[in-house]
Image 1 (cartoon, rainbow, N blue to C red):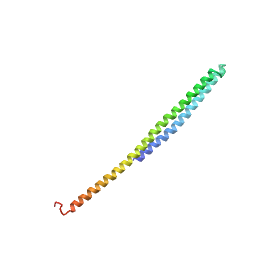
Image 2 (cartoon, rainbow, N blue to C red):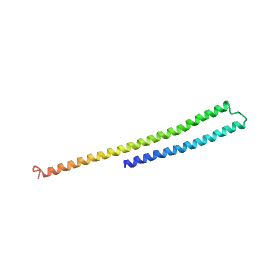
Image 3 (cartoon, one colour):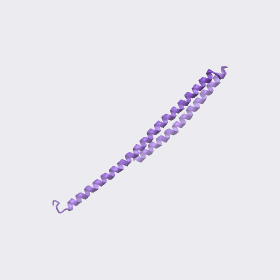
Image 4 (cartoon, rainbow, N blue to C red):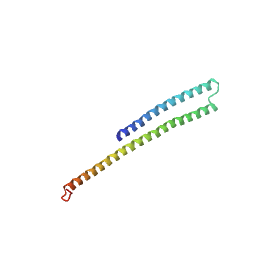
Amino acid sequence: MADMQAKAYQQQAQADAQASAFEQAQEKHKQDLLKSQAVAAAGASGVALAGSPTEVLAANARQNQLDLKAIQFNSQLRQNNLNTQASISRFSGKQAVTGSIFKAGGNLFSGIQKIQMAQSPFAAQ
């Protein structure tokens, strides 16, 4: 059961990575369109692409890169959390197996003691 849960967490982490890659591609496409529109608007207004318009475009490009990095960073945090949950699930499963082995051993030992007591010449009859 714990292994199944761990696999589910890992699949969620992979799905998040894929969703993040898609979101980054969509954001990049949107940013490229906005940049093209800004360049076209500047050109249509007769403003040369030097000085202030270039600085604005460069500032926008830097901000766009930060936005893409933020998407990637947040996805990585979610993936790390899911992978940690998978590890915890596996560990819990191993602990449960170990605990059940000790419990079974204790029950076996207790059963053997009862049999020995019943067969003892000193047992109450």
